[in-house]
Amino acid sequence: MKKAKILDFIILILILTVIVIISIIIIRINQNKKAMNVTAEVVNVVEKLQQENSEEAKQQLLETTIEGYKIEGIIEIPSIGLKYPIIDKTTDKTMKVSVTKFFGSNINEIGNYTIAGHNNLDGTMFGKVKKLKKGDIIKLTSLFGETVEYEIFDIYVIDPNDVTCTNIVEEGTREVTLITCTNGRSNRLITKAREI
Image 1 (cartoon, rainbow, N blue to C red):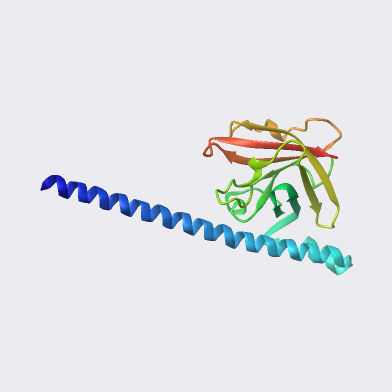
Image 2: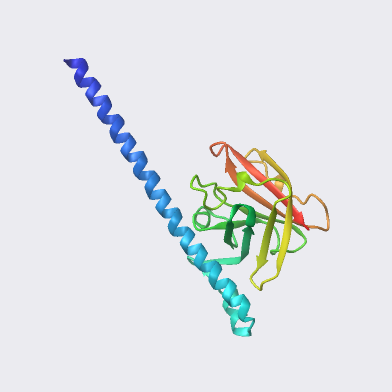
């Protein structure tokens, strides 16, 4: 009789644990969908303002924010259907909103422009970056509509404390580096691309 009560208690705890885990997953997926809708709306606003090409539109572009954070441009990776505004700084808060500038000068300038993003299980943010391969194209568009295409030339995994990926590989070139978590957050997946 006592063993049956213990077994019932264990089963109850397991059921409650599963319910809590499923609830957390559903909440996270809904948060990611909300963030995706907000980022898509910001991308649309930026693209419309870029087409206007007026002084007023240029001023509005400089003031464009996403949830109060300034953006620098748009990243697009056609092969995985990714398109996000790039927030101008990396913090725990900004990374919940969109992909972020981790290191580098201004977008599409000579040097290594480094972008960080979460590897969300539902494929949002940099959740599909693991599907990229050498030769795929990354497009970066500045707020004023100047687009530069970059071709992926290297993909590798590093320790989370290793920041050598922010170094430029070839002096005098435009490069972009994507950083996201992998292996259960114990490593970082690095994707490097160079201007075509």
